[in-house]
Image (cartoon, rainbow, N blue to C red; front, top):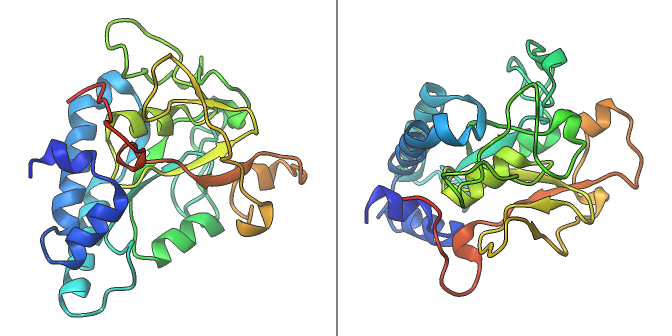
Length: 245
């Protein structure tokens, strides 16, 4: 299986391959990082990439799994986080130039739980400023490129513009966490038109804590958008077109 084929495999198949010893976290992480490097300048999906740290974590995951210390199905799985989620010691901009050098004082509950499950954080993906916007454009931090049209810049959708681009382009083993309004626009895995409304994606706020996420800092109420996992292309039934190799 080539690296590009790996990039579009659904997470349950990747997890099964790891459990069977047919795939390593290192191989999958290297694949993701290679694709980010190959397409990063054009697609502009990531604010920051933690390449060396991700590879070290992947090597450690492989050692743990090989020694019979597998935490669970997500152990060793790469993930990208939207840049509104704090990781202690890392810059979290919230999509704003004002916070370009803001260092996170804590790790968000969301991120801590993902890391506790053994996941490998590849980096942070772009967002519209303070996650307030549906088209995915960001004048100050740059707008990610919708990979379904590599010749003309089209709206990537938001507010999780970078995450949406990473989903469509196969840049991460598991495609981050999305911050969605009930009617948010975002890139979908089988998008026929430019923007696809993702339905039934809203999660109960009680399932996920706000601590360390922009909404918590801005004191948003219970009617605020809810966090939840973004869909991976291969998890959608039927043939899945790919915008780029």
